[in-house]
Length: 329
Image (tube, rainbow, N blue to C red; front, side, top):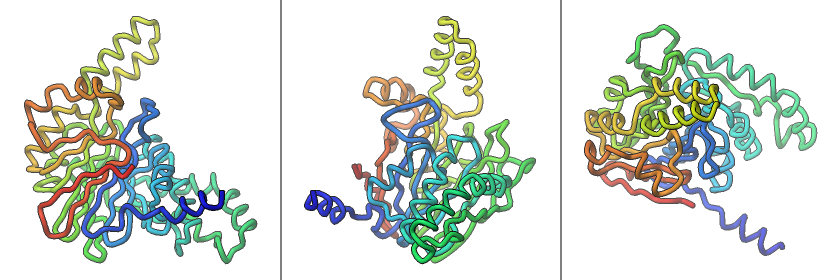
């Protein structure tokens, strides 16, 4: 038993410790459940620090299982406040706190992020108090276990396409742009630029001119997509089976997501080198469903496209055009 434990602990290496910009899909799925993938989450590593874009259900567990060190988590950036994008925020916070970070955990987002953070702070107040009492304030200072809201200047009512600089630090620039996801308001996409490389993460949106603008000449675009030709069938079948609530919900979600073909067109217009789909509705968890899900994409974008999965790692070495795709599992 000791040998097995020691081997497991010693064998864990940080998969995001390389140079340049690295993009790890820690959640490729959507609210429609899949045992194969966690809820939406993308980790972006630069300069030894890891930034998390959204925290879907199961994504924190993925990061822990893959050996991403808790203290390397520099903060979370939320695209919007749908439940499937914020569910693992407390788990990310705990992972980083127990790992030994030295300050409250930053949570960036548009208008409304302070309320989200305050709610989680209240809900986990007793849990944090218990952990500090049990392990000691020297190991787990209670105030370090806090979340810290970091709002930036995009709010409800601002026009789509409003763009701000979220932060610039040690060569990393992060920008946000408002996208269309009505009735959700605000919702944003993010762009990371570091050492001559770039990645854009769409969050939830329709096919958007804002994303085209933000993604101009980016190395990688990680974009959500809903396969309308599949979801329409799901809605029809739900009606036939006498499940009006499921039929209503699957019908309603058709109008505020982009289709796989529309996303390919966005990537082409933005001159993006590599497109990775995530937050896929429904998640294509077998080869046949992948083929159906991607129907029409190859006619628009014959190459440079990938259905992502939990554990897809995209390495962007500094000051080059190389894109290295791996499976860290």
